[in-house]
Length: 363
Image 1 (cartoon, rainbow, N blue to C red):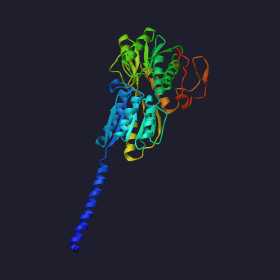
Image 2 (tube, helix red, strand yellow):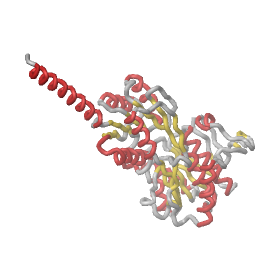
Image 3 (spheres, rainbow, N blue to C red):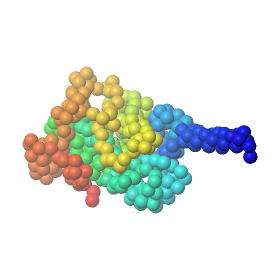
Image 4 (cartoon, one colour):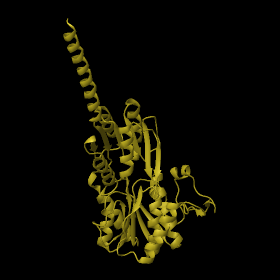
């Protein structure tokens, strides 16, 4: 082979290698990050799942064609959840968010089987190198709406539609009641448990039962707007859950606790994309923006708005903790002395009612 021929061959080889390198680089740059979401309710529940799906859409808006998101809605907690999570992990998803406490064991099990996939579980406590946990301090928002209820109840009876008697829900009932009784020491909270996160018919029936027992304000820790719609029909007031539900009850809604997952979902997706993702535990509240208070309804007077805003600000700055003593339980015992505050560990395991909550806590 002559020198010219050899030079041409070498150039061709170098060019081929260069094009191959460029091609790999372009392929890596064009790589799409797949993010999956598992929902316990329908995206149209206008509550918990609706807001998680808003976070998914925020990821799409932020990263455009660099990401591809998928979701599976109305997934039963248990074996069905494990099947769905495994399917997402095995189909090329880089990051999977599972958005209900009841998905915890299934998420942990699948995470062990797919160590290269990143998992994020909402409201749980099991973590691993590829499994993070996240939640919001919803009880902070419930302290704000409890303050409003204390100002506005005329009967002194507030109804509360509860989903399941787990610490998260009990914590919210207690925070609401403590704040309410700071304003109105004689007011009480009556709770009806529906044993479901999303069941509009049962939620609506629970609200009716509470109103029949004298409640003139309805709070809820369930996901449909049905309790608020009943409040609207019966001429009483209430609070939206997880999202602004004023469109369903423009006269009844006083305000709503809004779950805002947008920033968290964007940040965690970005961390997977740039290789900085690490297993973490996040519990954000009003200060972080994870918990927001919706605009006040017309039925909330200016002085009540100002007081509620002051409570929210004090919680945000750390000046006020919803569970700072003195706190008395149902039996009249001081469980949190003056000058002390419940720890996060104690909050996460809460299984008792404060003074002012009527009825027994289901076991």
